[in-house]
Length: 470
Image 1 (tube, rainbow, N blue to C red):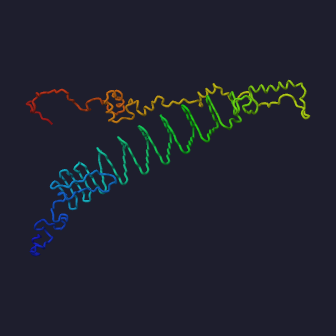
Image 2 (image 1 turned 90 degrees about the vertical axis):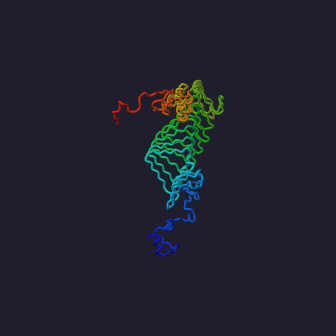
């Protein structure tokens, strides 16, 4: 049924038109949807093609302070922009406007892909974005990069995860940091290391723990410092060993030994000795110092040595007066002559332990478990240089060098003889690094030209006419 037939049925009134069928002029939309309101009373050419509208992808939902570094898009100029827009609003645009060339594929909701005039590529996804690569994937960014995730980020790597940073590596964490390493962990720092913990620091080691410090080490503890050690403790010093306490210093053990070639034990007051402690020394004096008979020393008991002469003199005194009369009595009582009796068994004829003479002390300090230990830690700096790699690279590098550092160093022929073999041994450079020819080049043309004229006729000769080639 055509519109013309409908008009015959409805009359010849031009203002009345049936919506069924195809209009006579062929430009009206039977559904009444087109032209859209923005195209009423105007050209039907797409507004983007005429530069009246700039189509942009959705770039909302970003991060505060993060710039996308995108310049504003210049409006298109007719007729350089070819635009195809679907009924729902999907757009494909090929814009050749001078200075604003771009390709745009845009979903009606704002997602899509845009290739801008300066070569920038913008990809916008309003919901999920999924990338699946069946093989390898390589991403190369010549400039700077920034990734902002307003949610969580999970990275799963079933193989090795290698990160090479040419500059600084900074990590700022507002929450906790948890690391779980099932096997070994190795950290190598080329220069300094600084740790600052504002709370509590705890370290637990199940097996052996070793610390090697080739320089100085200093511990500063403001509070108390307590060491609880279940087995032996050995401290050896190659020089001076100084221990100082402002209030109290206590050493206690079932058996204690202090040995020295020159020993001083000084105090304002106190006690030295015990029931079975023996003293050996050439001089004893009281608090007044070296003053004969008035040093203030007090002795309890008797002495073995020169004092024994005084003890024996009492017997001589008694023998002189053995036959004499008794001394005149005092108050009616008679007094026997001679010195008073000396208690017996007060002296030990031999020391209970060997006398610590000079030779004995010297042997004690030079041999045995109580001897002075000779301490020498990396005296020739072999371990230090091995860690710093100074011997390996003759002082040129203190860490394994990068390829750029190697190229810079080997520009000097003298350095090739120094570290060339070491770099090859560590597989940092190839063994044929001095060869001017790249590998697997095949034949190499000479510097001099060698023209050659052919003498065999091209094409199939008379002798080869009957041959066939597969």
